Structures are given as structure tokens and as C-alpha cells.
Length: 91
Image 1 (cartoon, rainbow, N blue to C red):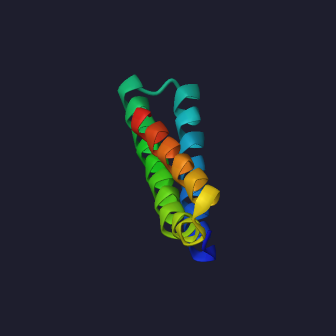
Image 2 (cartoon, rainbow, N blue to C red):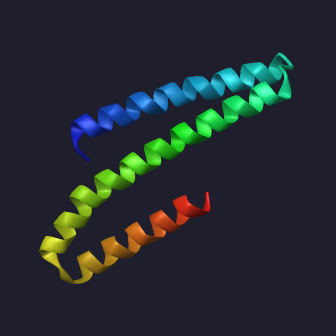
Image 3 (spheres, helix red, strand yellow):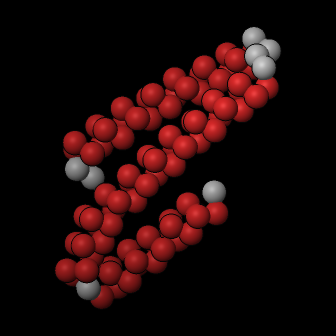
């Protein structure tokens, strides 16, 4: 993974971590359920954005490199990418 991309993803994950801590605080404080659900939805969307960013990076680097090598490596990387996409679609 590109170092710049990794730093951006880590920044996003730290922000999501803070969101999740905030949600836990809302539950502890017995906040209004709809407000908690709104925050859970926002955190879920943020995680999906991280996943899509990682997938994009994987396709633009790992898959391209595997395509250059061809053979079993290419087949393996394509299967992995397909499985990852399927997991994202199901979530």
C-alpha cells in the first residue's frame, strides 16, 4: 500500500474510532435511540468508505502487478478481489 494512502486510511480509521467511542458514550448516557442509530449509520458509512478506498488501492496496485506476472498469482489476486467485493456488497 502506498504510504500516503495508508496515512489517509489511518486518519479515517482514527476518526471512526472516535465516532464509535462517542456512540458508546451516548448509550451510557441513555441518549435518544434515533440519535444513536443516526451515529451508527454514519460510522458504518465511514467504514464502507475506508473499505472502498482499500479495495481501490488493491485494484490499482496489487491487481495490476499480478496481471503483469500472470499465471497463478493473477488468478489468486482476482479471486481475492472478487471475494472482497462480494463481502462488501453483502454488508
